[in-house]
Amino acid sequence: MRWENLTDSDHARAADPALFGADAVTTRTFDTPEFRGITFHEVRARSILNRVPGASRMPFEWTVNPYRGCTHACVYCFARKTHSYLDLDTGLGFDSQIVVKVNAPDLLRRQLASRRWQGEHVAMGTNVDCYQRAEGRYRLMPGIISALTERANPFSILTKGTLILRDLDLLTRAARVTDVGISVSVGFTDPDLWRTVEPGTPAPERRLEVVRILGEHGIGCGVLMAPVIPFLSDEPAQLRATVRAIAAAGATSVTPLVLHLRPGAREWFMAWLGRHHPHLVRRYERLYADGAYAPKWYQRRITRQVHDLAQEYGIGPTRAGMPRRIAEPAPPEPDQLAATEPVQLSLL
Image 1 (tube, rainbow, N blue to C red):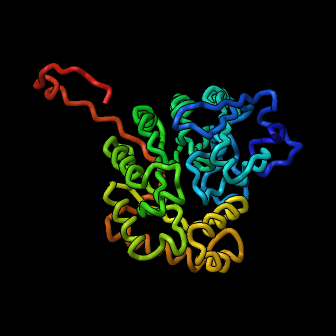
Image 2: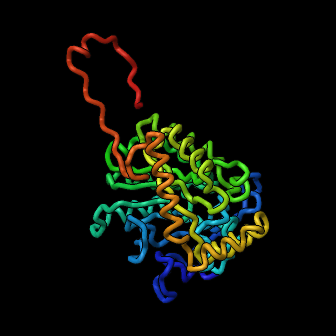
C-alpha cells in the first residue's frame, strides 16, 4: 500500500511530503454486524486542513476529511479514484477499506491555532461522508466541530448520514458563534433505485427527516439533489415527487446536480448499469461520450425543471448549504422577569 505517497492533495506528486508513513498504520476489523466485512486502517495524519486544487469547480478553498473510503457504497461516488492512490481497489475496496485519521480533532485544533491560519471557511463531507457508518465508532466529528467552534471558524457539512443528529447540540452551539451551513444529499426518493445504487446509506425519507429536525432546532438545511441519474430518476414525475418531498421536509433550498462519472467511478457505475439496466448502457455511452459530465443542454434542462418545481412548492432562493447563524434570543424586559414564576433553566 502506498501510504507514504498519500498527501493532502489528491493530485499531488509522489515526491511531495506524505501525510503519514507506513509505520503509522494500524489495521483493525470488528466482528459486529454493522462492521462485518469492513477493514479499518487507523492512521495518524500529519495534516488535516486540505487546500482544494485551484482548478476545482468547488466554491470553497479548504476541506477536512477525517475518512477515506466510504461504507455508503454509492456506485457513482466520484471519490472512488482516490483509493487508487493507496493501491487500494476503487470498487469493493473503496466500500470496505476505510482509512481513519484518528488524530483528526487534535490535529485540527493545532492547525487552527497557527498564526498562518486566517479563519477561512472549512467544508466537510465533500470527498467522502464524514457521517458514514465508521463515525459511529470513531466519533471524530464531535472533536472536529468543537475545534472549529472554539475558534468561531465558519464551516459547512454535506452528508447522507442520519448520524449528524447525534451532534445536534454541538451544531446548535456552533451556529451561535459562527456561520454553519448544513446540506443533506437526496437525489431521488425511489426506494428500489436507492436500494441498488446507494446500498449503504439511510433511506431517502430518513435523510429528509434529518432536514426537518435540524430546521426545528433553528438550523436551516438545504438539500443537494444529487445525483439526478439520467433515464432512472429524471422523468418529470420523479423530479416532482423528489422536490415535493424536499419541500415538505422544510428544506431551505434545493440544488440539483446531474450524475458525473469520473475515472474510477465511471467503470464501477457502468458495471453496475450493465447488471441492473443493460438496455441503458449504449445510451450512457452516447450521453457521456465527451467526458465525465453530461452535456450542457441536459444539465440545463434538469436545473430548469427543478428550479421551477422548487418555486412551485415554495422553497426559498437560499443557496444550498449557505452558512447561517442562530441568533441569540433577546433578553426579556425587566417587567417580564418580575411577572414570571421561577423556572428551572435549560440549555435549549
